[in-house]
Amino acid sequence: MNRFCFLLCAFLLSSQFLQAQPNGKIQKSLVRLTATEVEPDYRAPWNSGAIQRGVGAGFVIDGNRIMTNAHVVSNSRYLTVEREGDPNKYQATVKFIAHDCDLAVITVTAPNFFKEMAPLNFGGIPQLESTVSAYGYPIGGERMSVTTGIVSRIDFQLYTHSSIDSHLAIQISAQINPGNSGGPVMQSGKVVGVAFQGYSGDVAQGVAYMIPVPVIQRFLKDIADGHYDKYVDLGLSYSKLQNAAQRRYLGLQDDGRGVLINSVTAAGPAGKFVQSGDVLLAIDEHPISSDAFVEIDGDRVQMPEVVERKFKGDIVKLDLLRNKQPTTVKVALDTVWPYFLQGHAYDVRPRYVVYAGLLFQPLSLDMVEAYRPTDLRLRHFFDFFVTEQIYLEHPEVIILTNILPDPINTYLSPFRYSIVDEINGAKIRTLNDLAKAFSETPDRFVVKMIGEGPPLVLDPKQVEAARERIKTRYNVVSEQNLEEQPVAKPPENLKQS
Image (cartoon, rainbow, N blue to C red; front, side, top):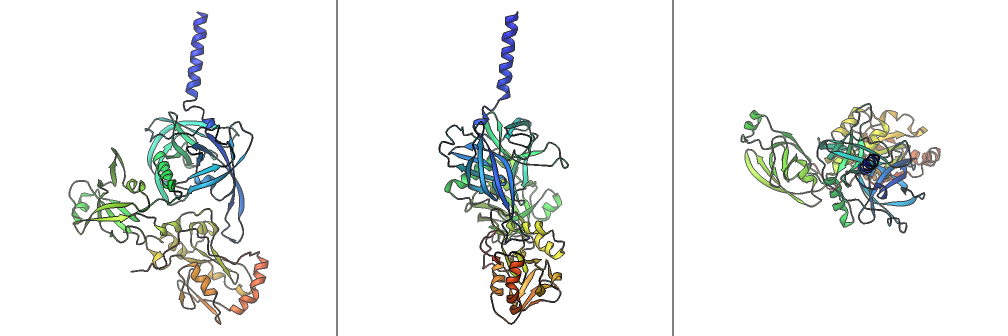
């Protein structure tokens, strides 16, 4: 009897041990990342910015590469990697980074670093209510941590790192805290996601998200040629067509198909082919239901998922109903640069021009978050930059953001947060236009702002006399930065039609 009890206890203990590590020895695949970051200073962009330190996780994949989140390594100036059970810190380098889907691949050049490491393999999309485990290095300790939870939702979600990109994301109940970011989420010994964001406790309890395998695989496929081309987009918005009377008005059959195109971005791939008021019936032969879902590989997914899986230059076929007549167009996919103004920029210095102690900067999300302006016109230009196609007249919206006080600009504070329209009669469409205008030598500069009110007038001789004084007083190392662009360069020949 005693021997039987001993064997039974031993069996139970060994079973519990096996169950405690359902995904194997993750320690041989997991790494701890420490990034020293420099956050750009948009209020004084000539400065290098504030130094910060962040901790995250990563895991080894094939090809001696480490996968992590983009937000873990963004703006990093020095990056180190630690292995479980190894006291050394190894310098790492970012090889590829995708801010639009919050993923990055880094590598370590130290000899034999990957010799004892085991690359992880990817699985698929886990089933709802199935159990997953998240691994990382969250606050509260130095060693690996694991939390478990269930898959509670599979849906499109906003990726907060860029603030403008929405992709497929999987909601899990496993706790995701600072330090978990970039770590693998495992099921049955395979990676089913990368931990990346969640809600703070005062918003929602136990709600976290992971980047699913389809997004990860798309990123890896994109960088296979040595360059990341970013996600593509059609550049249009649409509405569901589930109302029967509305469908009859548009000439649609009672077959539950089609969505209504609300707006089309002129600078987007579909700008020359699709019109507002068109009804989109199918995309790449996938019929679109009236609730904006399509069926792919036996699964019902939201219509944008068709484009999500494609790459720059790929052709997509659109079946439309225009003025109650069927038509078909083919669109070559690309990015939509006006969207970038409303997203965060990383790994670049802010662009700016300082003249007469006046700081001019292009409108951007980072600039808005730095200054928190309340000017209604400025907010309107930001909020409706894409939907009202403001970019056609102003590819870059140039703002007088700050004033470095000096006798030559003492009474100019009412112009702060104004939008520059013209300088001496020449339209200012980009920051380069502004820099070129100020490089001229007229008797005076008459700067006209958008809206009513008097122009801002500067005397070039007085400005030149005060130049060194202002630079010294405010430690302005460089009076302008035009080259490093935080957004895609707008086409110079884009005109309003």
